[in-house]
Amino acid sequence: MPPETIIITGASSGLGLAFVQHYASLPTPPNIIAIDNQPFPPQIAEQYGTTIHFHQLDITSAQKVQDLASTLESTPVILILHCAGIRGLVPGIVAQQKQGDKDVAATETLEAMDHATMMRTFEINTWGTLNIIRAFLPQLRLGVAGISSKPKVVILSSRMGSISANTAGGGYAYRASKAALNAVVKSLTIDVPDSGKRKGRLGWRRV
Ligand SMILES: NC(=O)c1ccc[n+]([C@@H]2O[C@H](COP(=O)([O-])OP(=O)(O)OC[C@H]3O[C@@H](n4cnc5c(N)ncnc54)[C@H](OP(=O)(O)O)[C@@H]3O)[C@@H](O)[C@H]2O)c1
Image (cartoon, rainbow, N blue to C red; front, side):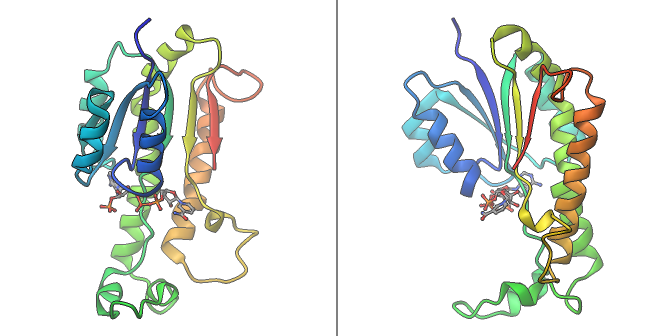
């Protein structure tokens, strides 16, 4: 049987990279479609060889994401781990802060937040999520046929996206983009006919 295929976004750093390394280390590793706008660390690509298929692209580009999905037209996908995202800090204020004297909260306050940061954060964290998941729905549906368990979509949200858990204020761009992402995922679980608990063939996880 050919190896199964999974997609990991945000694959070049942090949690996405850790997931890539985890899956690539399995005794029978899946084919890993790794996506990020930063280059993939060459030493890790070398270590795991042909298991990792890296694509450097911006997840907010409808055209580029669709082009990639088209190249995987007949490939069943059993898992999407969506880790690409940004923290939504105002770049100008981040740049002013001295190395070793960083104050993250100060870069996303009521006074600091600006239109460009808010829009860019929404574009990546919210639109980018919808853009990625919608583009690969056909491959997830193909994955339904091939395995006994459901294909899964795991989307990294954040506790900062919870309105009820917000007791500290600030974090305008990140909080709003993750709350909006949560709303997107909720609608996906309703709109995609073969997903959700009741209808249950695709599994959705927002973590
Ligand atoms: N780390 C935590 O403690 C934590 C806690 C709660 C939730 N999360 C969520 O978990 C996810 C991963 O976090 P992380 O800490 O692993 O972040 P990270 O290290 O910054 O990794 C995210 C990756 O996504 C890439 N990316 C950003 N915008 C992109 C775009 N438009 N197209 C393609 N790739 C893009 C980033 O590239 P750039 O370097 O160019 O931005 C980066 O390589 C994020 O959604 C984050 O909000 C993280």
